[in-house]
Amino acid sequence: MKFKICLLIFIAFHVSVYGQEFSILRQNDDLTKLDSIENKNRYQNLKAINLFQNTTLSFGGSWRFQAESFINGEFGRSGSQDNIWYLNRFLAHAHLKVGVNLELFTELGSSLVTNKEDISPVDKSELYVNQLFAKYKLTSNWDIAVGRQNMRLGSGRLIDIREGPNVRRLFDFAEVNFQNDKVSVKTFFSVPVIPSFEAFNNTYLDFDETLSGIYATTDFSRVSSLDTYIFYQKQNGTIYTSGQENERRASAGLRHFGKFKKLTYDNELVYQFGTFGNQTISAWTISFNLQRETNLFGRSVNLGVKTEAISGDKNTSDKKLNTFDALYPRGAYFGRVARFGPSNLIDVHPYINTMFNKWEVAFDYAAFWRYSLQDGVYGAAMTLDYPNVNNKRFIAHQMGTIIGYQPNKFVSLELESNVILPGSFLKKSDKRNTLYHFVLTSEIKF
Image (cartoon, rainbow, N blue to C red; front, side):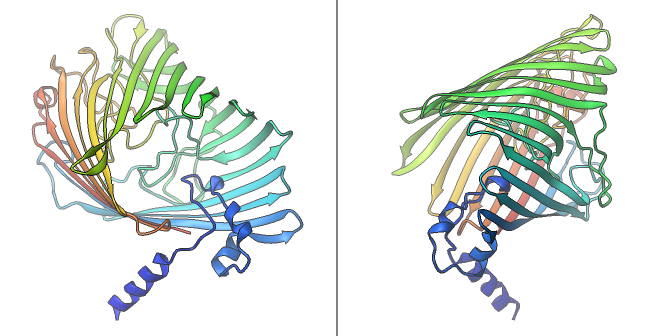
């Protein structure tokens, strides 16, 4: 009986339902194809409810389930290794469009975790407002928006929604946007929302931490674009190797991305300046991501390499802080295993991926070194997880595999595994054991 129920559910979701394209940020879902469908089914009617003339209401959501496990999670054998936990994230939204000028979007979330002992703020938040904003189009080129949103800018290197973990990153914000055929510019002020385990108990509008900025994209052609931006972050009580102080940091960046024949590129340069207590901030990062489509064994595959250098503090006793802060980056910056964050690093990261009908297979390898021997190694949340206790540079080898299956646009399955072999720095820090990580992800969107 259970098998029949599962089979019916699978068939129901496997039936192709035309009329929409899902986006990771659901306010950007494309529903334009629904207009061409005369006899809509119940689901399609739910996606585009005509309330009255030029006013539509759309509903949708998603459910993501993850089973995750670490062996030697901190490169040691202490404690129980039987540690599989389960993560569920539910998102439900409503999108109201009034004419061509006004839209209101609201999205509730529930992120739950089972069987995990050391629960972090990115694992659990029982019930919360994930997004709630109003957007008004002033002219054909200008619009304004205010409320709460998940924010992603550019490649997500510095500001991203943090899709990998169970709780997305939230900002309360106000913004002004300009856009024409060649240029788009976003000017914004925002306050990060601090998540809480309890329902509707997040800390909001805490002005001890703010983020503002201008982000511009210029399209040189259909296949070549340039992002230019500057961000200003205020944060009190920040911790680095050199101590804990109030921080005021500006980040100025350039990102050139596009495609040349079969070569795809995404390269970025960021310089940071400001103050950390009585210290002057001078930090930077430069990254390259090159990918080429080629044929291997008669099949189209993508071969790529990512590499970057990210500054670390040169001297903890001088009046300069050289540690780069990635601000609010992807939660899975170097894979879902997320043991090393983008600060004080040199990394080389070759990878290969391909598609087999509805299957996707990807393999990658990454090698990590400390950029500065006077600074430690930071975690994904910019916490000083591995302090500077020796003079070794090489951190670790990391190898990962992802196998994904997507029978249709509504259902996706993915299995990711990672192995990290400690290098001389971790071994000299008494973290000698190989780390193993596994995560199975399934997601249904509607």
